[in-house]
Image (cartoon, rainbow, N blue to C red):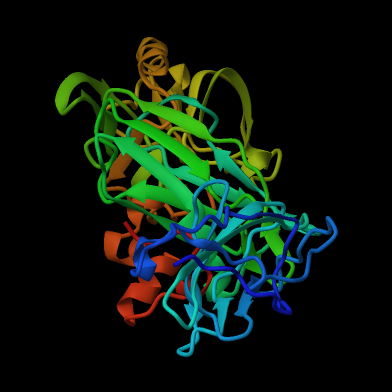
Length: 415
């Protein structure tokens, strides 16, 4: 027998820009409804909200309804990137609605399967576009693409603050970090606009790190949607570590775990003790003018200074460097006389300057100073224990209580 679609009034609460109707050619003579070519279900199911070329509002749910005696058996809705919209079908097959947010400025394809009272199968495929977002959340990744040391964290600066845990989970889920070889790591929310990503341990030497955002068009919260972002690619170099023992007045420089140089140094004197802990190289300056007034020392006081400094490697934003200090060579290796920096001979400082790179590690032990803070004076990320670091992830927080606030907005199925 052949099946002729019935004329029906269509009700559809969705977003339609165009529809592609599948051909309604039946295979005559078959007594098995499943053996027949699916009929065109255009008249039996509908989506409304974007007729006549209008774009759909992404803040509103997608809804598909059936008319007459037909019932919906399956609905899939995907965007151009292949991301699925989560949804629920009513038990009677009369209505399907989305439970996941639609993306802004995206094209969707909706495929609907139906069944009539005789068991014959129908199909309808509909395409529609959503309107662009009024407010965009953009992400600026750091550092810029290039080669870095094993201590370099990845940063993500957001163009607008995100505080709600569910919205944070949406953002974090979309920030992708792919490494070769695979390395365990996680994002940590420093504040409402800043995230840092680091592995459990330092990056393995010669790792490739690719960072990108999948937020473009995705609903974050309210009327805020993700915008486009520029990806970055980092190449991790050799593992270079400089370990300064302030009590022994010595620095040991290692490459991939093997000592390559031992350097007599002087660190911060009492009252100006050098910070303990792991620091990450932030920059290198072949010449810098150092003044005591920059760290709060009154000009003309006993501790004031104004010095031209060569071969300066910066490790904090507040002005801690490893640098040439020819004026203190008599104390290097035996006494701490600096205002907090690590001083060494000009020859050693030039060698260090040429050997060290952005992202390499500078660690200080056995100093009377406090420990380097994680985020407010450079990259002290490695001074935070891994357990505490993970607790700063919106996704890890969801795993601890058995839920995940991103689930309600997930657009891609788990793999």
